[in-house]
Structures are given as C-alpha cells and as structure tokens.
Amino acid sequence: MKIDLTNLFNGSNESISINYALNLNTLSYSTYYPLQKDVEIKGSVYQKADVVYLDISVSFEFIGVCDRCAEDIKKDYCFRLNKILVPSLESDADFDDYIIVESGVLNLDELVEEEIQLFLPSKMLCSDDCKGLCTKCGKNLNLGNCDCKKDVDPRMAALLQLLDEE
Image (cartoon, rainbow, N blue to C red; front, side, top):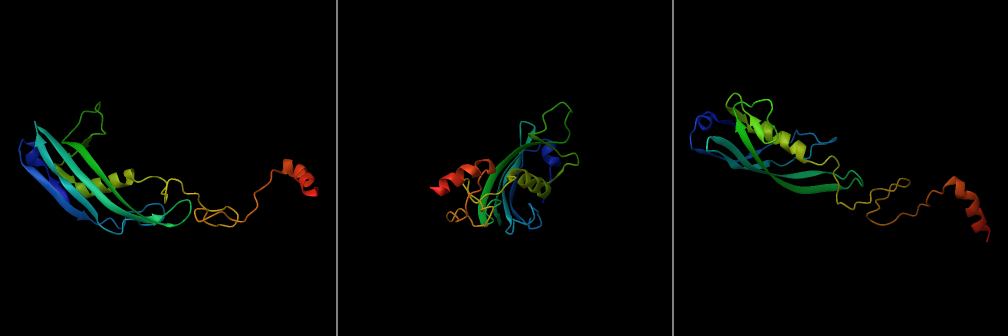
C-alpha cells in the first residue's frame, strides 16, 4: 500500500485511515516461509502541530518449527509501530523514530515487512523452557527423559571402574 503524504507535509489536517491485509507468504525466516496468512495492519497517518505521525498496529500468525526440539509452532504476534514521517532529515538527528519519505509517498508494505523481520526473534522456541532433543538418540526431551547413558569424563573412568567392582 502506497500512501501519498504530500497534503499532510503541506499542513493538511486530514487523517488517513489504514485498515488492510498484506500478503507476506514469500517472507523467508531461517529456511521456511512462516507467514502463511495475511498480516493485518490497522491505524492511521495524521498531522498534528506540523508533524506527520504514523501510528499502526501489526498482527500476524507465525507458523514454523522450534529451533531446539523441531516441533511445529503456531504463535500469534502483535506490535505497535509509532514513527514520525519527514520529507528530509539533517544528518545529526536520531533516525530510530523517523522515517524519511523524500518522494512524499510512503510504501507501507516495505516498511511493515522490514519491521516484522526486525521484530521476530533470532531463535524461535516453542516455549522458553524447551529442553530440545537428546544429542545421542534424538528423543524430544520435553516429552520425557531418554534412556541414554550420560557421557563420562575419561579422567573419571578409572574411579567408575572401582565403583562397578563393588
């Protein structure tokens, strides 16, 4: 969605309402495409005291795989995006809160895609306390312990032989 901000930059008090669905099923995360349903974007662009603001909420469903236990994950995410839109910016200013729109037209699709990529964690987990897989047999440790014997430090092997003899 492209939004023409020319009137707002020129002092118009109009508000541009935003309510649409964005298809990002080609967005790659790790080795798969987790956004199989449309991303919902709601909010507005408005001008107040000669400053143009973007205030939107972005919500989407993430479908993927846990990086520790390889189980399927389905999580709903929602975040707010509040930015100040400017036609130009001096070089010594902080760029985190500002979006430069030199042409006067904001490409909201590109902005939302970039923000989603920044929002997603680098490791996706099914839960914060996911135990992962056994390194020997591959059993999902969230479902219970495996029967594998723990590795013994070779320096302690002689002591364990003494215990076995008794």
